[in-house]
Image (cartoon, rainbow, N blue to C red; front, side):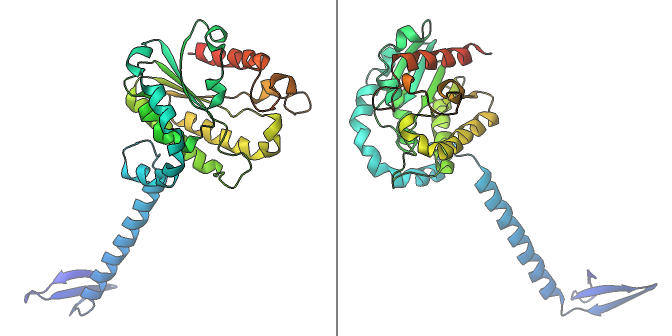
Length: 273
């Protein structure tokens, strides 16, 4: 049936049956119109929800991003002074060739980073026990007015087997925010997301940690400027267990031999076009 206006201006419905066409004043027209409006509204709402769910959380100032980060702000204050100290020399520490290292103590305590990573110029912006949930909040501050051409990100503390752990999917969203903040500061920079290393002290969580690495790899697959650096094969023995000789006595942090292995992996990926 199709709506049709009669000579009096009242809506009619044109009904076609075979070769005959019947016109009748339609009391159904308001019902049909209301039904069409409701159907359109449902379809539009469904489409909007899908778009929102699929939109990457890249913009640090986006209201959705701010709301997502809100539950983590109180705990993040623990590192506020560290961030202030690290960022105080941003205007003088960087260069067009610098590589900024964002993350946790694996970068912070790497005392031989300059020689291990030579000839690359490394600028560390890392603090102990960092997690993606606080790095997502502090990345803009850590790199504001810092000149760099590449950024490396490594954090392995979001899944440690405690009640405060977040899901791998949440880590993925937080990592997206970190990437977005880096590219906002330096739109032409390359970003390297380093896989969480298999460590003896946390190997019981390795299956779940691998899901985090999959999230990081997925982010890298979506944007040409972002790269994923896998590391597990170099830190696992033939039986698939972490090589204890690469770690300090805490079986968590790399020792000098471990750092040499790590550096070789990182430099290999930096050399790739």
